Image 1 (cartoon, rainbow, N blue to C red):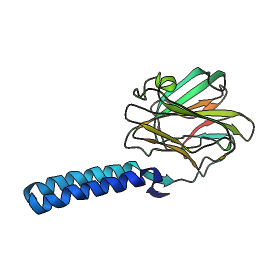
Image 2: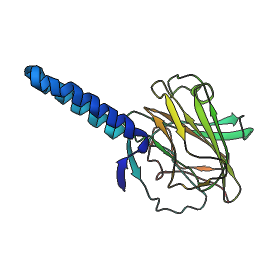
Image 3: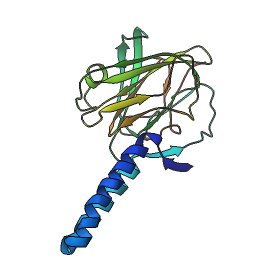
Image 4: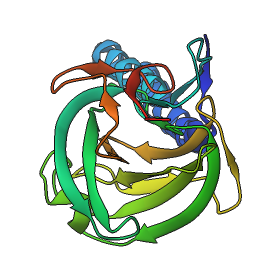
Length: 220
């Protein structure tokens, strides 16, 4: 597994580096006693931001037929039957993964197939673990049709700290579980809406790895 810096963070990291250099050089020249703790704090901040924008490329080695993989690194915080009213208009299983600021924040396609629908919704910035965040927070909805014709909806949801959702997927795109479909900056949540007869392979509290962890199997 190769890890690099995600392009969403390149400018942020460069600007932060220049600011920290501008702060630390005068400290070492004119206020040397305070320079060591300031430099240490600067290094911790810089490395934390670099860690946040890490962008691993992952290869799924399992059986890809009818598989649904996690779209994000994090923890399963919701797994329940609900009614999806934006696109599917039917009862489904909602599987939600919450990401902290320490998780990778790239988002993967949950299934192989074709992107049918993409829509961004402006909204609030409540804590992403709250149930109402799925319908009231700023969010992006993506619908993918699998190769056997089933429609899977996923939703990127902003949180209290997440102020920008980036969605790369566009209608007509080919979706692959090994490809990034978007990015959420500074902690949030991703929901996947599955058919009621899907075999669920995770439970509340389980940790997931985006593009790797099998979370469900669809019926043929």
